[in-house]
Length: 391
Image (cartoon, rainbow, N blue to C red):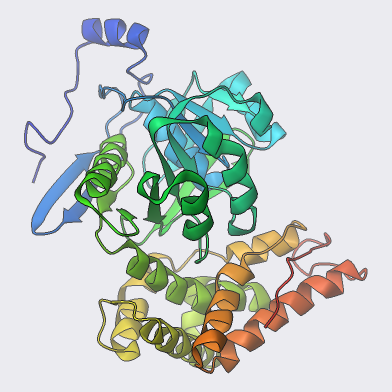
């Protein structure tokens, strides 16, 4: 089924393209990508990922605060759809984007996006921004929030896209709860080289919502979900973002540390009976903590979640490799504290035992400390590190 006339964006003629390109509303032509089916309630919305579509920009420029793989995809596609976008990222990547534009390929289509503003330090940014997408790792989120929140305009919104839990609260304290949206992301991307982002897996649309959604806050969430979907990133709004973030923690807590410790893809973990048994324990413990925290989950019990996990989520991301493995290999901190460490700490506060999550957190911490004492990563020989965690 094709999108209705109202739901899809017009494919303009070449004469109109020239005028709109001058207005900054169009990307250069590239090979068309796939259609994406996005479910929103009972309505099915098909967002056509078509180069050359005209999308009027959302009000105010957009900042991608942490232009790694996911941030580059989000920022690049929003820019291709007409938004004015600034990327804040590492120097090598930003230099390549300035020189050649941003190349995006993989599951969301093939694009070459030019005209992006690039910065390598927060002090070089020039606001105000109508929206800031916080796409740094969880351990960098608090510091980045402090640096970029002053750059939000009066009606601006901060969209937090981290793995794990514990970033929405400090963001709300800094920006005000009404100006902060959470986003649950289950698409994977890589940076094969500076200036290029590749979308490798996508298990579900991005979900965007407010922590305690009033009508105005949910309208903002719906507007940005629509903007992402129209730009080619499958997305939809949710009125239960905290529960959805907990569900993402179930997924990450089961897969990320084991994938890092065993050097297996997500599909490989599910195929190994011993790894699968450990993942079952991780999910069961995390589910019990969420229940004790009065989180309104979509599944009646952990078995129901496991059925979806093994039946749909893992197959959709079977070839993906743990970001924690990549972080350890590159000598960067991991997000263990926001995932299994968060489950363990919250469980301790609520009186729920989480021995498997505690053990995995300690193993990742030990893995990092061994590297700090001079051992080398089995992945590529580089030193690795981690962030402090207290059980």
